[in-house]
Amino acid sequence: MKKALTILILILTCELSFSQTYLTSEVIEKAEFHLKEAVGDSLFKYFELGPNSDYKYQTKTGKYKWKDISKGKKTKGKFIDGKHINFVLNHPDFQYPYTRKTVYVELDSNLNLIREVYVDQIPKFLLRNEPSDWLSENKIDSIVKKQNLKTPVEPFSKRLEFDTKTKEYYWIVFNTIHKEKCYSDEEILHINPVSGIILKHYEERQRIMHCSE
Image (cartoon, rainbow, N blue to C red; front, side, top):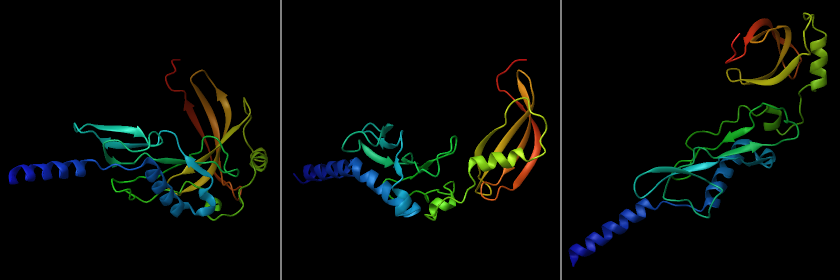
């Protein structure tokens, strides 16, 4: 009898230790809490749960699987981590295409942060809850046109880039001065979005990948 009771206790203990599950709403709320701590209440309201926000869990057979955190009322199996839970910033003053607007909140098995929420790519004026201090795109275009650029073969193009070393944004402008099937010669400018100062001015040949001449 004593032996059977011991075995039963061991089985129950193993089951309890394995079945580390959460309400999916609890996981999301915990991630939102950490995000709000990182970006502040004012900016937080512009975030929404991103697509492919999944968690990792372990099945009873020991296999690791992933599931969308927004699916189901409870997490499945043994909750391992939520490293891929992300939120997308949709702020009216930060609607530039090709810029990274996704912020990851990485949770461990106890829903604590694995690492600090990375928010360096969010413009400083947003984190300070201040109006944008960036020049308008029309102003940037005007600055480009005032430069002594070479004769282009097509209208110049630009996009906003983030420098991971300096942790600052800049406009990168491409003035195409020669174009072939598999490459183009570009006159390139880097422009500070706040001051309009030209940070770099150089030429570079850019090749099209997987192109045969």
